Length: 490
Image (cartoon, rainbow, N blue to C red; front, side, top):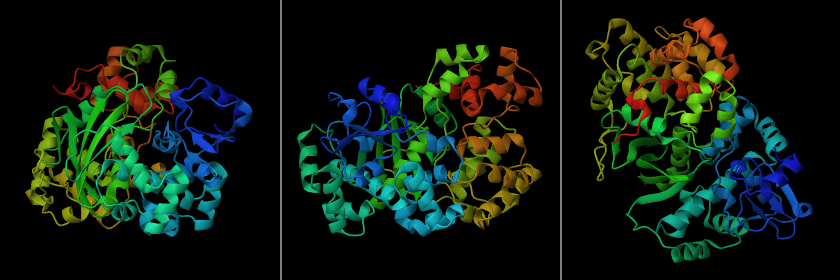
């Protein structure tokens, strides 16, 4: 969008928050860059220049605005709605892969050379992978500086910097303040009482956001010991590269309040990325809802509760296992089966705040399970053990940067994987916004209620008008049935 100067100027002059994250405004006279909704008086159009990323602004010599804090705006919805190499690269960078594995590791995951990835990112985002990762490190550092009491030297390494000197130089260049000055400014603002070891932050999103189906779904399907709904928050355990953690996510007006407890602060970047992915916070609900409203049969459902998101997962392998356990059984039965696996094979943790007791078992931990001990039909046992083996040896990858078409093909080759299981995984683990479940029981009931075609083939053909947002159409269709997944728990 940054190449459409006229549209960008209109968005800035109207302070339209819907475009935050789509592009960034660089002010030539002050050498700062802002989000479109910056509350200050808009500059003259001739003094504006537009960039596709914060990293591109920083690379061009602009510093972040201290009023609108553009580095904290929602991410571009493009990266979660596309399956090309640039979108997959951005999802990996946001997940901290460049900090952990370097540009070579990023390229290897994508199946390209480092030079090809550099060229593609420069062409579309105006910055290469190192610059994009640097911008993210700066944002993570700011969060740690302002929300924790960690010594600044520890903040530097926790944010992914290789040295304290690089940390100091980057923070000063990006924010025009030293790390110490950032902490002093944050200390002047009224803060909630801090809990030792807990990082409290706000996760922004584009409005509207309907929390009912999002948190209702997560709470209704929560696996005991791994997830829970407590005091108005969805809580769960996280398995992370350097350790583990817990997170509590609470819907608030204009943001999601997140409370993270990590065994290693170096995991903060990935923990934030996983939480945003879980709640689909980078979506553009206006674009989605406007498309679905064009169908008269969906318009009423959209108008009744706009802004529905697709509830995803923090771990693709975990969700695939749970999807198999949920085949042809009730939500309660699926939770029971998953809880048994967790108790038998999950790693125990301490949770001073609530009832979280285990990490969900990894594919490696499940690879040695005895199928005869599973309270499942024999064919389902085969399905589960085959899936776990493929995940454990790396034959099958279900990360949110995985190629959607290839993953679908690989899943379909496994025994016991029909269209419902494959599309459920595509929707919630892989994040494909166009995944569709015509054979799902709740969707079939909605189709009957609305007068949509009854057969899967005819229904799929009818739903072609909803593309590329059929996964969101599924969320609205599910509201026809009065199921706990549609309601926030009491």
